[in-house]
Image (tube, rainbow, N blue to C red):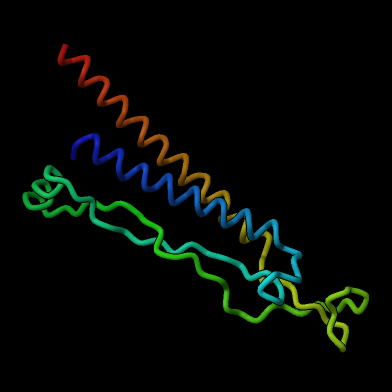
Length: 145
């Protein structure tokens, strides 16, 4: 695998993890949002990711010879949670229904925080891989001089 392919794979990972972090941040920021322009409480969002083959001449040769499949990641979609909102009894809230219950977003703060840490670690791993590829390319150039 050449260093440009490594960089493509790592940069696709960086892009996906950045979007995941934005989505998680949005979920956390709207933890208490009971009214949205669409109506009702904020709905938790999640990023759907898929693996795609990395296409280049060297990678295809490598794949044919060794049977390896090199993949990069790509965002397929951003989906909203379809679960019913959780109802919290708070009759003094302006969005309370006739029975005094408020429809709140289905967001668990701890789960979102774990997702955030996992996303951060994945981002850091991609940065490390990208820097390693860059260092190898620079070293190869230096050896060729």
